[in-house]
Image (cartoon, rainbow, N blue to C red; front, side, top):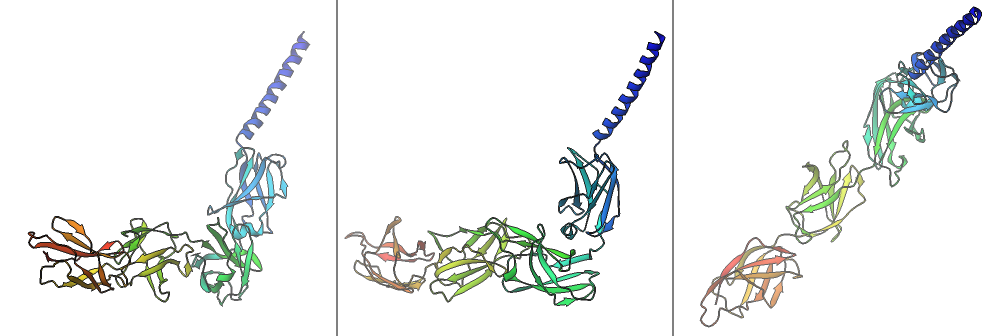
Length: 414
């Protein structure tokens, strides 16, 4: 009996030890993978980096991965390890990883648990404190000059490559114009820049050495301009006149100077006017200047030297103005010829007419016009007050293209 009791006690102790061991292992896994250090902390794409820690798992599975994150938060990339154990992972960074992210940190993920961040790893081939200008551009024609400042460029000129930031696609190679240890200048050809598809709003590009893609001089934001849609303010019956304000909805890119508006006259096509849009109350605005002659114009918006594809037409007219009329020194009688002198009446009558306001705000129109030009209108007076009506006052205004003259002529009739 005592022998059986001792054996049972031994088994119980072994069971307790086993449970404690299982409990300890389970507790460690529950905390997820842990990174303790990496070696080395600098290198290039050929450098094998060892990431040390615990709870990585005995081997890599579909549910485990190691990721390199940019130190500046620009992105990340999953890596293919050379070796994987519960306490150590060996990995190399790809050429385009270091080209895009010269410094960053590692993270290990096992199942739904993610490790802490490793110490920072940085490329020992990266240039120091580089700055490229301009760093944000829109499509352009001809050639555009760029400058790069920094240090560690060396004094021997090297061919450069314009490439896509994300997928490492190379667009074209070029040779810089000036190369110094702390300064480089070069031009890019607008015809060789990447094209946009209908859905693409922009691209992130980089300039790197042709012979070593990990050595990046700088990044350029290449942005497709958004369209500005004119929302006409102040127009009358679809016509515009000097002093009208045109409001444009939509936004251009924040790094782009204020867009330019160009009115191209289609009647005739030889005249155009160009001005700068101003920003006010959350939209771009433009006031039609007084010196623009009447005509039909195509509205062209320019972003730098790039024309917006959407180019609507507007018709600008001048406000008709009355200078004087005759015979203004007598009471008009039916059958008299009245002549109004002024400007902006239009070379032909079209839908123009004379508005006659009789006493009591009654509005009538002449029946017969004898002549109509831009500066003079003649018509036959057809109104009468009747046999015992005496003389009564009236006012006349000229109405052209839906716009009535602000000046008026006044007199009497009988």
